[in-house]
Length: 509
Ligand code: ADP
Image (cartoon, rainbow, N blue to C red):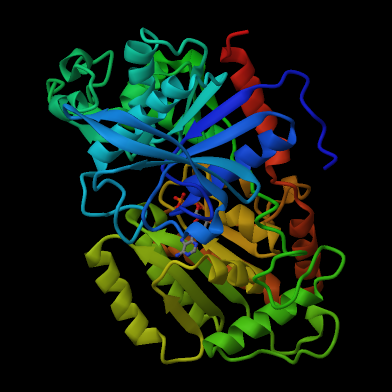
């Protein structure tokens, strides 16, 4: 590879609950894999520590082998634990497998074990493994509340034992996932939970009178890490201005950074993507038309135009295909997603939703929409998780809808652009940092999508109407935009350097 190597090389270990593609639920998995790959290409040594979930398909791991058997503490017991080594998508992994029931079950999250306790165990087991094997990375990079206790364990326990060198960076992908925890639960990892029950440590700021029974692992992680990163500059500002962690973040402003996520361009590349029936790139977008036709046929949507001809604008009855690929949770703007189905049908477009709900009420709501719409030829609602289908849909789509109420960074608008789908997004968080309106005459250089601001249906309609108008009335301009999107570089090459600078600013030489 021709990536330039960094002058000052380090060893970085990620401790994370997700890693794409073997244990991915949302953007966290993509970010860990993409950032790790970018740092490896720059010459750094990188390992990812991940719970060995029972649901991980072992055949996806290259060179899987048992490396260390050791004991790690949980709730008064030393639990025999295996550490395996392997490689996924070119990235070295260390998989932690306790001999108890933790991480057993059919999915990454939601197994029949106490999730909070399992991740407290995992946080300590990562450090315990480093101690047992004498591994001292320069940086331990933790993510979200799941590994938020690791910095506490490091500074208050393992530094007093034998690990001295690492410094800690926490990336917060979503401030609303706060890892609520009681003193007693925290004590299960071997710390004295009551020592953290103060407002300057881990007590959740929201509770009246600052209830010392209610701690947040995310807050503890913020206080105890050397640096904290969140996933876009706008989300950084939003979280300093409002939200339950604002005062904590203001107190820690000097070590708090906003770094936009990148796209893992090895995983997401329409010119080489093995999931696609036809490949394409900026110089030749014919393959995108084939992908659209393939998806329409496969899902029983009305086919539009013929496959003959080399340019999209040759089609006479072009029907725009809009996709929305998301976890179906309130944050993502559920009422706007269900409204979009109706409005897109009225406008004569097609829509495919690929979404998984974790809440049974939301699932039922979308099941009834499915029953209502899936009989026709313009809407498909697929209530499942499928990596393969997501690749095909991004490739087939003319537009990708991201109507989030809040969105720390958002990957699906960036992946959409990488596959030539024009984003239609609400102006919030990372969406505001990555998408610039095509109708904004003052910023045509950056223009790459359609933006709306309100959380009401009328605001969304406005953006959809404008997008459909452009698509139908100005097909040549539309194709120019698609080619422009295919050339935009939102890769980690651009943004990993910012992480490296933060790593460098905290490491011990
Ligand atoms: P979040 O991290 O909040 O889930 P992001 O937009 O940052 O949101 O990342 C979402 C990632 O998960 C994208 O890669 C998207 O394609 C993927 N994804 C979400 N839902 C599904 C699904 N049902 N099937 C396949 N991929 C999905």
